[in-house]
Image 1: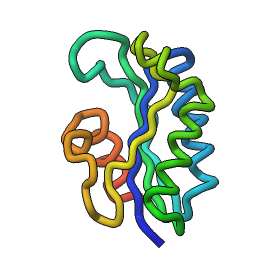
Image 2: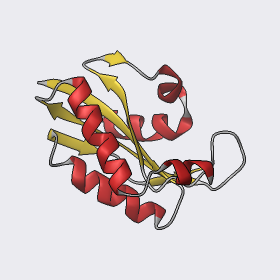
Image 3: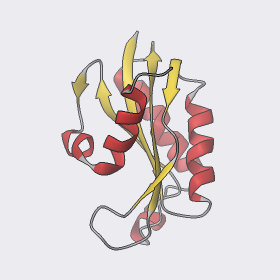
Image 4: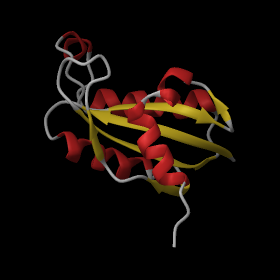
Length: 126
């Protein structure tokens, strides 16, 4: 089983609802899933719509490539198309940031939109 940390974001439509739905969906792919609360952050470049974000982690028996393929199919099914990209509309974006302890998206790992949720998951629970 591989441990994965995922970043979720949406800046279009029912942004919070989009992230919540994606978190419910990802639960079907992950064992021992944990997720942060859903929270809002500004667009990273300082222009455009704000995002609702979350971070989730869990374990999967899928290989990295197959797991990522399923994420991208889900995004497309939710409206993440080339046309939406041109309009800078992100119904849902799900990225693998950490896979089996390796940070595979270091820029995302350092960004506030990931750090908030990552630190929320990592803090001790009562």
